[in-house]
Length: 554
Figure 1 (cartoon, rainbow, N blue to C red):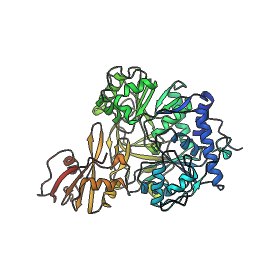
Figure 2 (spheres, rainbow, N blue to C red):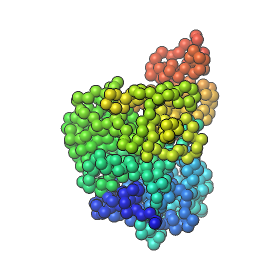
Figure 3 (cartoon, rainbow, N blue to C red):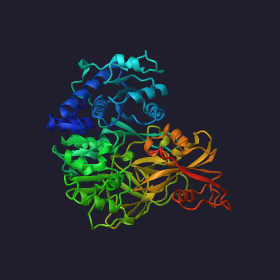
Figure 4 (cartoon, rainbow, N blue to C red):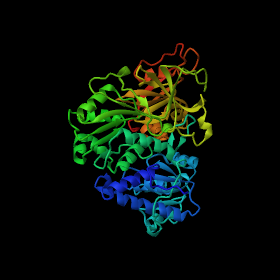
């Protein structure tokens, strides 16, 4: 029997559930633009059908190049409606990085939203040769801008015309084991790692959320996350599965978030904890200031007890939860419901809670050596998780080494996070046990930042460290070689890294300080970045230059 999408077991199926409940209600509202469920569905069917008609053999994977405008949503849904693997791509990423993602995931056709022309042109100049469906363009405009083959831009990409007559009657059926989407995380080799997530992975996840939360058609969800970030899938498919409305807050909304929340009737909030600090700076955490909220979720960074309490006071009708989970474990895999004003977390941080039903938890003692997992421990160690939300592995199997562990008859994902388990079985976050850090919710390998820095003109070697900054962290780079202006280094790194993780501080050293093992003393550099006195020359092998800040690397 051919599979169908009449159940909620797939992501398109969850949208169809919302369509059945709220056909003529808003599915997304962005600025002055609104799309109802029916309009969003029809646009996605038209885009998906036009793409499949132009690629008769069917693409292996379809890339969706999107921003945060209203047209991004039918573009992403269209990718899922094609029935093949969808790869969300961020239009603000460096073109060379996006091209590496396209090549790694086997994308052989693109759908772009209405705002993606500049990104398409940059991709073409970087060497992309993909057929692209860009609904906003006429053929004449495409030719003028160089997408149709007659314009002044080099390396034009083939143009797929939008054909209303080719619209699908319904989404293409898929199987639970099919890959729904691929997202990319940072890699220590200097290239992003692709994480395939199946419909079965997301089905288990959203079934648990349906039982835990009471979302309905009257709920209005924020959509703070970029659509290539896994937490955005929570926003989209919790809202659409319930027949609710998505509202992406523009940057200007943070100047007065209580006013924005009231104007749009927000009931469900989801963001990184960094947003709490921003709303506080703008004076928005006044007691009772956001009284329309029913649910408030935070993920992507450690959430402080102070931030949780202040948010709960500003949104007194809201339940506050701290969610946790790497991309490899499908969006989030644990949750902790906060008790405002009473509960105190370990080290002033909200617990990451208990792991979702159906999953195994293994805590490992410190490693016995490189890529060698230590033995199980009862109360404290590296968190490893096995279960139905776990990806089968990275797109490139070579990336699996050191991250996946086969033990006790199960395949475990080594999160790299150190946790402590209390007497009630609740997990408390202690910090990272490896070289990954979270910057505004984006997980990045310090080794990737260092590899990018070494490609800058004049840089001989580089070390990146994380520095606490206003509830999150920012990155600082120490480098050897020729001293360069910070703006020049930041400009070079913006060609390789997402803007949010481009380091803000750059320090030239004649040599790196060394520890007692004659290895680069990263702890000493982290202390220096945090404001400690510069390392001396005696016993460290280092002489420091002047620390400089690049204000352009936001």
